[in-house]
Length: 119
Image: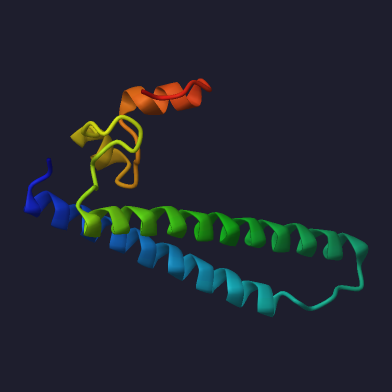
């Protein structure tokens, strides 16, 4: 069980990460709008399209991470943050410090990565 001080710490970490990712999304949207110009040279068009696709991928990754972080915030609100979604045990504090949005303890995460059903 996490102390109220630790819970507040993790809430701050998750909130800060969400704010950072929202900034990334805003920058990607600005970049996409300003890079809409067409180039006469096919090489310039190809480079521009490559950059556009990279920005789109970055934005999609940011949106996905915001969803994961929002789920962590919900677990904080519900009082289940730090509890493994598979076995119900505690997620190791060092794991939460490294990956505050972790939903599984090390044992269950390892089982998931190996295609096994965590217990």
